[in-house]
Length: 405
Image (cartoon, rainbow, N blue to C red; front, side, top):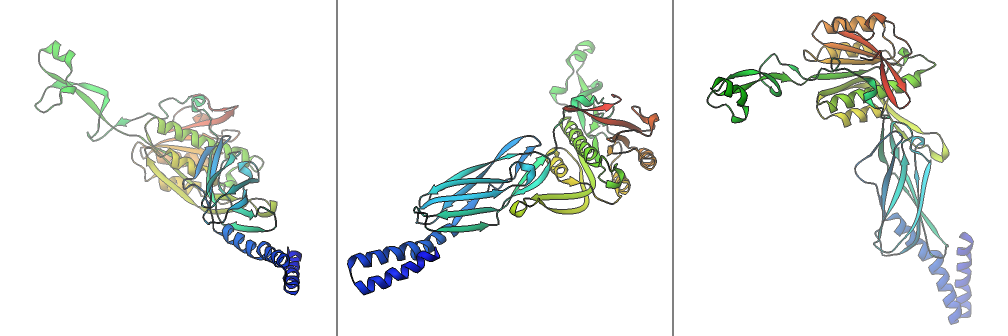
């Protein structure tokens, strides 16, 4: 390019010396092609509008998704070709995604980037490097964009039916101590009709037997609170199998949360962990990480499965021991009758002792051990003073409890 610009000055001087129409035409063409057109092309490329959608892409581990990219030529100069390169983290499939298109003035085009959720995590796709060129291939302009888009890959879905949990672990609604929430699914008896009782509550069979209007009397219930505690303290895991058991713990938390929410109960999550985001490294380098370490507490509530799964997508082990303090602090703040599900690599003596302390407060505590062995065999598969222990096993495409409850 620099050589042709040098020859352009030669053509201009040659035209001024000859003073012929052909020489002037050659000099004008050279000035347009090698000076004016590159400037206009660069301006057009820099004014390209490149956008990702507003909502993050969400998928489960092993699934595929499409991330659309919108490219618009907002200027009056047509672009013979525009190419882009998107940089992808390793966990989303290929390292780069390339595309080429042509744009007329004010034309908008859409390009789909295919993503594969190879492993759970919170990823940021980008940046996008855009190049544009003229029809003759003489000049090229580059636009570097700091454009990123969040992609959330949830933990792998394992069928919860394989866990064979009985209702005593998640007993559904419990009887309220105050008569506030009558449950139509639980008939507690009948009583004589009183003025103002709804007609739909009339018990017609009892009315026919007694000869007087009788209405149904319902039991009063409240929704059960289930709080998941995920142990992400790296010292508690075996150094030789920390990755396997850590992933099993996250998958177990996701499976339990899905079961609780689908049962109509209130579910929450508490964990002390690294919260990571991943970006593609530059020039083929390994991915870069940005992470924060802290306590995450999602209070029990209904319809929070998406929030819980998003949190589980980005958690990683942290180097300090803080799980016991987290369980004690959050556990004591829960309401009477709540169920605490502790997902841990080992059922240590300190943890079991703390579980009994919380059970004395009227809480039900269940330990789900994802490690290779269970220490407290006397609690395995049975309830003792409000505390029980199960071992979680991964069998092909499902999770199971041992012993089956």
